[in-house]
Each structure stands twice: as structure tokens, then as C-alpha cells.
Length: 121
Image (cartoon, rainbow, N blue to C red; front, side, top):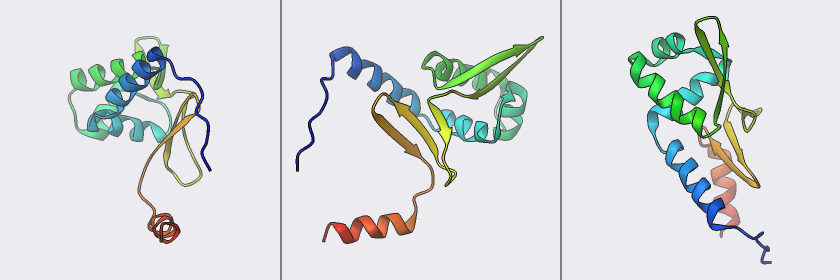
């Protein structure tokens, strides 16, 4: 059975392509996975990932510009957290919602992989 696809504009495709470009970097994915446990400031993220502050700040800026992470200021500190379009589901996977598209980032489950393999036979 064929599913009908809603009309996708060139602008939609550009935004989606840009978002996937942002998510294609290993460091940015590590930052997102670090934020799964809750909001953290740049220093906490640097300590967790063993990366220098300028590197982490650069990647956080890109994630923020693409509305993947949110931030709040408390005095001189800036705290980052997963944005509303990014959350953790019950299986501890990172889930990103982009309009009607869901992107799941996390460990591949052997059971789900076996089930998909059986359905293709």
C-alpha cells in the first residue's frame, strides 16, 4: 500500500538538509547525548567530553541556531538543555522531531533488528 506524501517545498528540504548536516557531526551528537541527563553548562559538557571550551561552545552555537538545544542564562553561566523537539524516549534513545519526521539516535536493538529481518523474508 502506497502512502501519500504531503507536499514538501524546496525550503522544507533545505531546512531538513541543514539539520541533518548539523546532526552528522560526532561531537554534536555526543553533546546531545550528554544533555540527556538534564541541563548542563559549558564547563560541565567540556568535562564530560574531555574537550576544550571553544570547541564545545562552537558546536553548541550550531545546535542552538538549528533549534536542537535550548539555553538559559543564570548570571554569567549559560545552561543548555534538549529543546522541545528533542527528547529521550523510554528506551533511552534520543528522539528528534522534525515536522512529521522522527529521527532516533541511540543503540540499535538486536530484537528490533531481528524482527525487521524476519518481516523482509
